[in-house]
Every structure is written in structure tokens, then in C-alpha cells.
Length: 511
Ligand code: URP
Ligand code: ZN
Ligand code: ZN
Ligand code: ZN
Image 1 (cartoon, protein in one colour):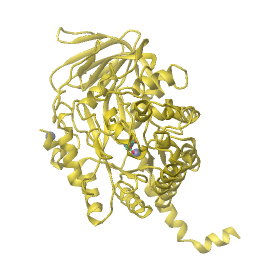
Image 2 (image 1 turned 180 degrees about the vertical axis):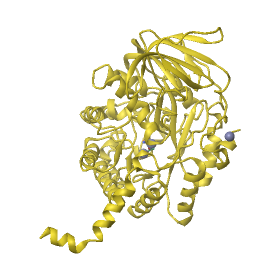
Image 3 (image 1 turned 135 degrees about the horizontal axis):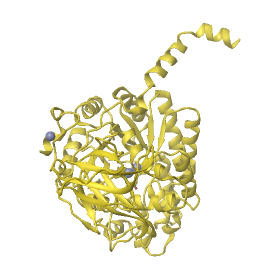
Image 4 (image 1 turned 30 degrees about the horizontal axis):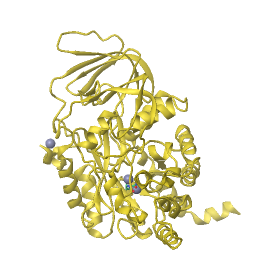
């Protein structure tokens, strides 16, 4: 009963709600290397009723009603969790082509078993926004959670934020510092929002670009007669992302609340995060797959259909930024990988054929993320297999406070599991992908490592290149507030207040 899953009465665990799982399916995965963020080990995994029941070597097969899957020579890992998607989102005069069914098909075929999507308020109203997304998600085929965007400010919005956190399982709010005239917020709103987030134990997220300067940059390009997709990149350079990232970080520091910077696309933004972290501030940086492995040369392709598919915000940057972001990810400056999956087909992208400002912003990635990160980061030796699990799944589950139910293969965890064969390879493209889009920004991309099996809450949903999924089987995952990133905030507030109350003493010490 989907409606039940959104009401407070359903309780935090929401056990037994939604379809799937709980159907008595029993699976034994034998002989693989089980990888969690804390360690990799040779072990078997026994699953019953959608939950991991045992993880240890040599689990006996038992009776005939247990399906045995041989994982010898393969990695058995938590399914991916994508912290950043936009399914069925109304944006820039159109709607993203992937909805909660086609998006889930794509995700599961690519080894992702949960994602967190952004609810956009309807006319600034949060409750109406949630209701709209609840309906969109009725066809869900895998587990999902919600962040919520805050696009205007008044007492009603502040009250509704509290209701979202306390009754509806939302523990994060996104503030767009760009998209002037539609989603953009002022510094004043951002400050109010940060303060409210802090009091609720909800994580503030920012899209960090200076929206006023972007509008100015767009005008500048038009004055120069640059109207094609390359104008998108030229009008919003890395300095505008660096500026907004720095501003958001400083405002979060002023309020003393944790900050999550979504889609970190440039060295400029990454360096601001690195600096804040070095100074002890709690800032989380999320690179996305497109920013890690693509570069902006594609925006200069003379074929509009090709160039326009790479238009997203902040823009995909010049060669060099991606490598630096990869290094930041391997060293922990950036913590987890998203996609910002926000797909528009070539007809939708063509809305901007004579004006880059009208090209709907967004790229695909939900199906490709797990494979691309494995191939570009693990296969090249940049990160370990345990770090792979951390950046694609565990860290997301921890930050959004659903670990270890999600993000781990431990006794009691949801059985969201993938089996990856490191010896096989993949080829990506619009003819084979499961997204509804007729284009793919990773067209023709090849690499090593193939997700052969995806298990979603105990059901094998992807195997032998075949999806076996049902609309409505996905379940809403409630995310409680005050996750680990809030632990200690009260103490640092108390220390700050104490320092203010001893001014005389301070002056004496200083002298
Ligand atoms: O271009 C993008 N990123 N589209 C999705 C909306 C957003 O800013 O995340
Ligand atoms: Zn329920
Ligand atoms: Zn954004
Ligand atoms: Zn986004």
C-alpha cells in the first residue's frame, strides 16, 4: 500500500510495506569475494525474504528450495546507491524522459539498486511536491528515497520542512544557487534554509554556481553571436562554480551545519572543499560520473544532436578537471559518486537548436555509473575494491542515515547485491541501454568489469542480460534525521558559545 509508506504511522522501518522481498525466496551466493567498505573476504552469502541472513565461508547448500548462484572468481558487492537523480522531473519547459520505471530498469541493469531523487515543490509548496512525486514513484521497480528542493521561503515552507523530516522520511534539502528566474535562491534564503536544516538535523545540499553571473555570461555570449552548445560551457566557467561553492561553504560555517555540495564539476570547486576540510569543516563533495570521465571538447561538435547531449549544469569542464576530480575522490576529498541522471532525448534537446539557453540541462548515467567507476578507477588501480563499494554505495547510505540496512552485505542488511565479473567487458550505447532516451553521452564506450547479476531485496532482477522487474515493486526508504555528519555539532556550538562568554579572559590571554 504505497500511500501508507509516506505517513508517519507507517513507522521508521516501514517493514512489510511495498511489494517484493518477503516472498520466501532463498538464495545462496557461493564462492565469490564479498566486498564491503570495511573489508573484502572470501565468503558465501545466504539470503532469505529479501534480507541477508548469513555471510561466512562454506555455508552448506541445505535443501532444494534454495537457489544457488556460483560467484567463483567474481565480486559480490552491495548494489549501487545513486545519491543524485531526476526521474520524471519537470524542468526547462519539458519533462525528463526517464520515469520511475524506465529509470529503475536502467539502474538495475547497471547494478544500482537504490537512488535518491529530488522532489521539486509545486508552486513552492512542499506537500504538493511530495504528493506529485509519490504518484510519479507508484511505478517504482526498486527502492528509492527523496531529497527535497527549497525554492522559496516563508513561515509555511519552514513548517513544511519540519513535517517532511518528522513525518515523511526526508533528511536533506537542496538549494539551487543557479537557474535564475526559476529555482535559484538568494543568500538570504540560503541562510534561513541552512539554519532550519541544522535545527532539524537535515543535510543542506547546494547546486553551487553563481546564478546572477551565469545570466550575465549568457548575455555576453549572445552579444558575441555565440548561440550553440559551446556557449553553455563558455557562459558559466569554473570560477562561477568556485565562487558559489566557497560562498555556500562559508555560510554553512557561519551557521555551523554540515554541507553537501552536489555535482562538483571543477578543480575550482573541489579546491574550496579541500580547503574547508583541511580546516575541519564538515563538507561533503559529490562528483558525478560525467564530470569524472568526460571533457568539454564534445560541446564543440559541429553536429548539434551530439553537442547538445553533453549540456548539463555545472558544465562538463575542459580536459584536466576530470582527472583532478578522480584524484580527489581517491584521496577522500570527494566522498561519493552520483550521476545527476536527468535525461532528455534529441527532440527535447533540440528546443535549444538556435539558443543554448533553451537546451534542457542534463545527461544520463544511472545505468553507466557502476561500470564506469569500476573501469576507470578500480581497473586502473586508482582505488581499491573496498573503496569502490564505499564511494558507490556505503558512503551514501551512511550520510543519509540508512546504513547498514543499505550500503553493506551484513547480517540483517537488505539483500541489494550485485555480482561483478572482472574478466568480462562492457560496451555502452543507446541501442542497448534501458533508458528511454535515444542518445547516450557514453555512446561506444568500452571497458572491463561486467555486472552479471543484480539482486534487489532478495529478488534476482538482472541476469543473462535480461531484466525481470515489476512496476510498483519498489519501496520508499525513509531516511531519519541527525545522521553521523551531525554528531558533535552541538558540542562545537557549546564551545563557540563558551568562547563568546569569556571575552575579558580572552583579551588577557591575547595580551
Ligand atoms: O544539468 C543538470 N544538472 N540538470 C539537473 C538539475 C540539476 O541542476 O541538478
Ligand atoms: Zn506501509
Ligand atoms: Zn544541480
Ligand atoms: Zn541534479
